[in-house]
Length: 292
Image (cartoon, rainbow, N blue to C red; front, top):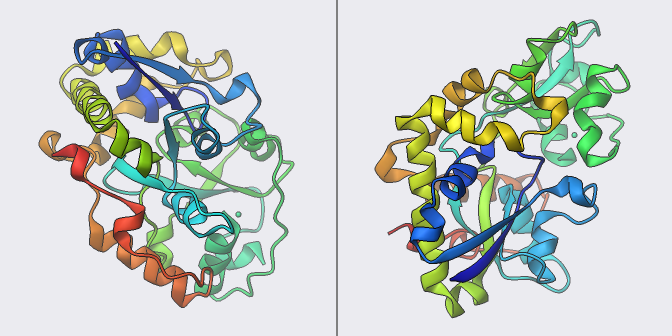
């Protein structure tokens, strides 16, 4: 059995369901893999998933495309690369409290520069106060009124919000001409992939089977995820969350595939907005080779 460690980007939620299904149904075991799943609550997000890969605490990380760009362009670059995506379309949005006078992004005058540009595209100045509370407490700061807006996943916090007294409005990136890329990506070190290609390929095959199983057996899949969901999130309607998520999984045969043109469009937008100056190739950010 070959060991691999996956660092999640958040406490177990609907975005991760395919991993837990693959583990519970023995799909990883069938591929001669022993997969350990790291929950960020164990260290209160002291280290990001990508950082855990960089320093050798994990082999795989869940992170947005911007994280891959960041690691490729820092002073001492790290060869992080996306090898599959969970969703074929963006399920995130900016959530704002409806009891505030925020009817569009320009009224906000948080990823920071992207949201700032979204505000400017809507006619605002982009003058906003950005704060970063404890990672696992971001949603609570909005629901309790500490902050006015936060970036959420509609298929998780959006579902949770339906059970709260707090009324919210949502602003999606694509509605304001922001060509947002894939999130979350499954990412790993390119050099380690080259050394252990068979293991990573087996991981992707088993993971694809796990996510596809969710589409075929949604009720069972939800029951397999339920025990891992934190107590504070146990009231979220997992069936409804999975139903919304499945719309973004894409065709079963195409699960995980990343469209190079979409990534290139996002990368060019970042250059146009002067958010990054170091020139990168799309092939340095993503690869679909392990999906074939």
